[in-house]
Image 1 (spheres, rainbow, N blue to C red):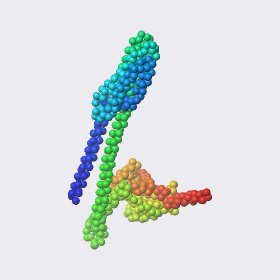
Image 2: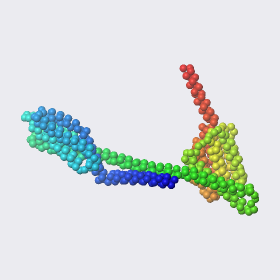
Image 3: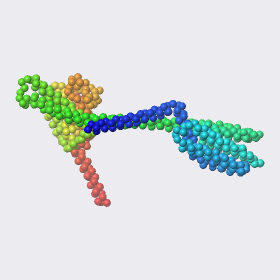
Image 4: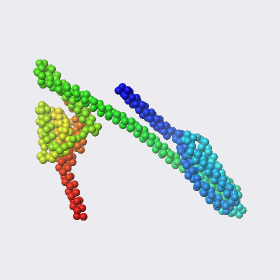
Length: 516
């Protein structure tokens, strides 16, 4: 037995260590994410790595688009330039393009710890510089004699298309954008300026303006990428926060389940351990106070026996109420419903309370409307509700007061029980307090009335289990009225009407089917 207990203790310690380790790892990861997201330099560096990934992904996706453009340019340029030169240029451009594709593939396949190295940005920049120089060579191809102005216009159109394409591909890395576009613009501008013509001068100025425009466009695309990455970082931050909250809630739920299990075990154990000696105390004290085995010569001993019996009954009632409330809160309290007359239960409770009311000279009035139908309810639970409410009314009603119990139908067809006294009443602001478990009003505390403050909590729970409604109305100095209302669905005639209606509907359907 001791070995099993020690093994269980060791298992519990191991489980707690694993949970603590998971919590520490989660907290450490959340702190890393927060520090990385909170520091501007860290955020910028993280975005650079993300932009490198976008750059490489764009190059891989455009692996066949750029060669197609180069092929079209080479084919059209053959009208003004020798095909041998254009073929050589096309091969060089294709090689430089696929060099960038290979570098991008290598970057995507590289481990995460290697992707953060600066060498990759240098490779991308060098590759784009070579790629831009290969396109710049196109504008240096020797033209045939008598080619005319057509080649100049085609050069300018190719310049705009190639710079736009490189801007879209390299906007995520500004250095790569400059490396892939500046050589082309520089060569075209230099070539146009070598010609002493207003058209060439104009095209050179427009080439410089186009370069500036696409740099601005690239900067805007870069801002859009940063904004997208910021949103993604905020989303990751939110996910980390949600994971943290989920972990905390799981841990809190586990602790709550453990506490609930411990409470259930405690109540199960204590209900037996307390009730067994209490039954003995109540039995022996009752024999002593009733002098069953013979008279007591000392009256003080009899008084002590009465006090012991009264205190034992109070403690037993407290234990029963705590257990009842615990079962209700745990959802383990089951209703044993049957067809009962509500007025019979109320009358029985009134008979039980007459002795206590007579001891305080309290007039107990009972009135109910005739012809009320049976209700479908748990008789024991309903009796407990009525007894608790009538007991409270008698307890807080002063000597010579009165308690009125009324029973009747509600406007919607249900039934209600109203218990009204002319006691001191409850201040309006204290009504929520007395409805809570162990809650007591200021009058009960001042007058030191015997009670646990669980009666109304149990009443509310039992009424709610019957789909009913519990209402309390009170004014200071005028008295208190409590009303228990059962819905019309609890009436037995209501169920009959529903059955009759459904039966009539079924009969109509059968008759219709028969006629069809």
